[in-house]
Length: 420
Ligand SMILES: Cc1cc2nc3c(=O)[nH]c(=O)nc-3n(C[C@H](O)[C@H](O)[C@H](O)COP(=O)(O)OP(=O)(O)OC[C@H]3O[C@@H](n4cnc5c(N)ncnc54)[C@H](O)[C@@H]3O)c2cc1C
Image (cartoon, rainbow, N blue to C red; front, side, top):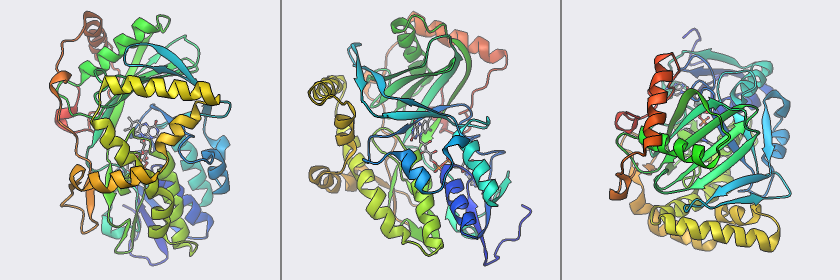
């Protein structure tokens, strides 16, 4: 691995993703010798070209203001701001959710220069961090564990394509195309992504992506889609008894710090990395800070997920209508969605009632008391035949793949959740 472990002064971090690099940068700026180890060949390789959204509604403070406060340079990666999204109801009605402010910023994950992963990597290197790629280290030799998901609670699959359609975002609540979850369309500067999320485990899951693409092609006829590659991966949603154990800090997805309802995790990944670094620099108490700043949102999202697991398209439709009604009244669509994510007494009570039987104990968690949201079983309604359009899209992908297009999630998901 090329470094000497066990040096008291040096801090070793497992994982050069967002949480690991954020922690490393703050530590190196604080004067520490920092080594980050990643099993992959580069930061962002887990995602490889995927668009993701930095949501800006859940916490009342603009995430970019937080990043600036923590000392990160926002010009190091490309972020495209949006204040409108097509809200696609389960009955195919399309309305617009809008806000006078910034609803979210789309960034790219991966190994290209303009991705957030490479932007964070450059800042870590500039601060003096030493990054060791293709480096396998033991958990007990590291101070910060930032290696992303371990188990699978949900998966997302998407196709990236060339398009001449202008920049656009669509967010669709549809229990058939995205079981228990949502699908989305993101177009940034001539590159599009259509993705579907599966919060119920499926066989032959590629049909969900094919059918979703067919849906978008039918409703956005000017996409002129030319497939480039397919991407995706798993999400790991856990609640831990301890976020610091035996002197080690569990940050980002390794600590289960994500939104259980819809899978937003980047903000908590960076934030938890910064909090861990702060404690090491003598400026905080990681366990207490995670519980104060992040856990109320995580617990709210567990309650939200429990509710989502109990509903289908009829309730999704009611949600869309309530969202639009609230937007009309207040002139800002961000208020309704923000409220959904914010902690309340009722959600806190619901969390206490549902979490004991909703989450399953992870026996391999070395006493950290990890309880994971299991990947739910498929329902009867998840079995359906693909439309002829979706079959054609699947055949098109087979052809494109034969010509060398990449499928970047095959190693990252459980065998029986992979598209077949
Ligand atoms: C398809 C998909 C779409 C998503 N979309 C969004 C979105 O739109 N918005 C949002 O906020 N969140 C989104 N998320 C969640 C978000 O990507 C994660 O919450 C976030 O990346 C977690 O950051 P992290 O630092 O914990 O892990 P990562 O950024 O994934 O970094 C983990 C790193 O650890 C490395 N690693 C793994 N195992 C080891 C090991 N044994 N030793 C050393 N290194 C290791 C990996 O190679 C990786 O580089 C999405 C997730 C998926 C799968």
